[in-house]
Length: 246
Length: 246
DNA sequence: CATCGTATTTGATGCTTATCAAGCGGAGTT
DNA sequence: AACTCCGCTTGATAAGCATCAAATACGATG
Image (spheres, chains in turn orange, brown, cyan, green):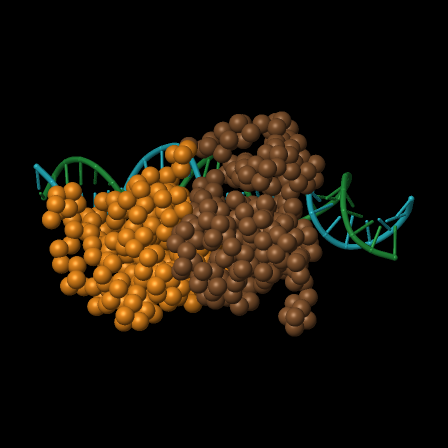
């Protein structure tokens, strides 16, 4: 147990909630696998780590060797450019995978920071590749997850490239709502785990603009905001805002 | 040879320039493979297709079953949103792979259009997966290519989210220049295959802004533009522009 | 070689969002 | 309960880019 000295936040009891028994299995990596494949995944993912709010799961430049699945909590990833520019590249909820961007250079290009107390499953990537060589459906699923990441980044590109502030924020809220729904939470009421500044960074806006648009939405009866607590009152109207300027 | 009837633009002579003998092999999928693996790739990639300027390689909604490697020419991909918004998501030069975004839903989410007369190698994806199950280094390489796409999309997100028009265009020109260099062309003189509008769409700017910034760069002696012909006169200065606002 | 349509350039104006600044509010601490 | 810090809100102003409009250049076509 010498590892415990270097990495004190190991989960001693990983098997207690193996992939095969995880309630996130339909959202996460195990989705669609046979019970046989699931068992193999269980043998692969033996380490989980806890993070307090504000702690880093990894930092830009850290060597890449694992993917991380959000088991509990909420993360942001942000890219720190060589010129000092800092941009949030994503928010990550339970069942979502982080770290795929590290494969290409064997280094993580971004930081991953817990926005609340959180827990990650550590997925050694070489072993995942090894496993997927013998399990076509796992292989395909991994490819789909990577492809989904590409698609979602491209839809953010579209958002940033062609939407105005109100549209961006409406799209952002609807996206969160939809992801909450997929996790069995209310589609219309949730807590934002990130600051206005982080939302702004992700959406290519300044924090003041985010705040102003929230206020405007509130005045128009679309949402009710109180600090980080959001209630979405009129989803159809938000949808029309997203598809507005064309 | 019944296939010839349905797909008239097959290359009858695919083996003449198999991956193993292709002069793009160091840029493209074969990069880093053993000669054994290369041979297997050769057996996989038997179809190449020619496209006249303006023709589509695939369209949004088309079923996904292959990746496409640009063997000659130049492509754009663009996303057509449900609200009618149209955004260029990428430009693709020789040796680059298109279609990775189709894996996630088994449908291409975007159109791929030839911006000049071009040629693509068709890579059946299921067979590529099959092959990569037996060839770890091919598998890893495929994963790296997908990851690289994620990274590059994220750097476009940063560009769109935090750069001003001049910085975006400087970054765009430097990116093209660097990719031309990697292909053995001049880093400082090339033809733009896309219109100002397509550049603008990719960079989140209007075509007039693209034109104005080009003119400004020209007045400042950074570049010489004449329609689609670009000469970059001061690469270091362009670099300082990219890293300006921080 | 003339014509036509499209791409590009350039100018004038207005909208959107950034910037700067000040005040407010809530969570945690003493 | 008062204090303090940090995140948030709101207002005033300015910068940057979009929009509208017109003129020009270029390539394709007959």
